[in-house]
Amino acid sequence: MTGASASPGGRERLRRLEMVTNPELTQLGVEQLLAELLERVRELLSVDTTAVLLLDPSGRYLAATAARGLEEEVRQGVRIPLGQGFAGRIAAEKRPVVIGEVDHSNVLNPILREKGIRSLLGVPLLLGARVLGVLHVGTLTARRFTEDDIELLQLVADRVALALQARMAATDRVAAMALQRSLLPAPPSAIEGMQSASRYVPGNGGQVGGDWYDVFTVDPGQVWIVIGDVAGHGLEAAAAMGRLRSALRAYTLETNDPAAVLTKLDRHTHQFEPGNLATVLCGVLEPERRRLRLSSAGHMPPIMARSGAAAEVLEIPPDLPLGVELGHPRRVSTLDLAPETVLVLYTDGLVESRGASVDVGLERLRAAVHSEPAEQVCIKVMGALVGAAEPTDDIAVLVLATWPENRQTC
Image 1 (cartoon, rainbow, N blue to C red):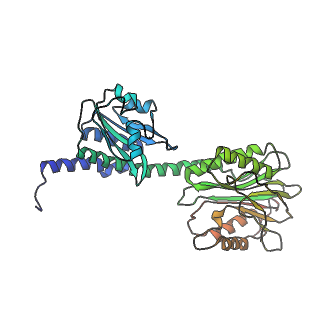
Image 2 (image 1 turned 135 degrees about the vertical axis):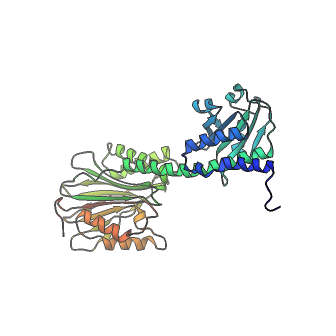
Image 3 (image 1 turned 90 degrees about the vertical axis):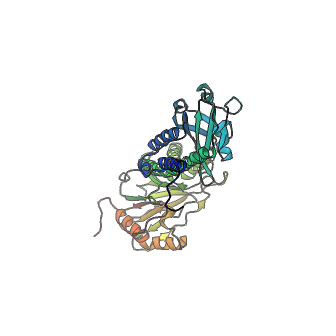
């Protein structure tokens, strides 16, 4: 009847639900949230132990992450193979599991038996069809868990899954940005008789990815110029980018042939970065001779502008990107950089946009590049192609100009 008081059982159920859906919990970090929810579940269900195990990045193991009454699981770094034991079965089958009497046949983790746990209830942490992990509770005396117990625990698990998704995304973003900042070089060191300028802008609302540029010297008189793009976004792509960048630098100690460096880097990608794809433009600059030797692993073509002439899209043969197929030859193109020449290297985020072809973006970029000091070129390129729009993909730009370092224009 409308307006009637809730029954004692109904009031108790409402109280239990409010304890695990309280808005104040949204203000907590992941570790605090897990600790608070586990403690509340322990009280609500009158259980002796609570634990959360999360699926590791390999997708093969559940790792003990937080616990009450089972702190040993976390401290000893317990890992349960997916599909095995109590927790592994919950994650593999994506459904609640109840064990009335614990024994060697139904529990893999010896800590559960050593603690004297008699009965267990566990539910999956799900985001749609994706399994993040498992939440389970246990008692030191035999217990018959009810449908209400299962429903409440699944409610908590759903809340934990949503909180983990939000917090992990935020953590990934911060970590990836820190990693990106640590990997991107400072403005390139002065190159005799030349200027350089660069930009890096993360896409997807600030979620950085695998774009990078690099300028470094190995032997006197030779400067390595690199720009690349590892497919993907976020921390995983940024980390893969860092590994490829380090490997590329190591290979330049063995040869001054950019095609040979990319061949070695391709083998490295297949062996140690399976599943990753990357485009890279790699070159060796000889400033005194104003000569640049370039090799392209499927990367976007550079734009060049000479004094008194319109900019052009250079026809650098784009060999296969890294991680596609081994055994194909890689070529080198040689550019002569006359005085007052500008060269613009960039990643595809600069010229790709929704509703327009890459050719349109390339033409806009070409039209924006003129023979000017490097920093002015950078400013005009970013203004013309990015403007006030929020980038949907990472953007890296590297500009080289054969202008004296102190030469500027009005």
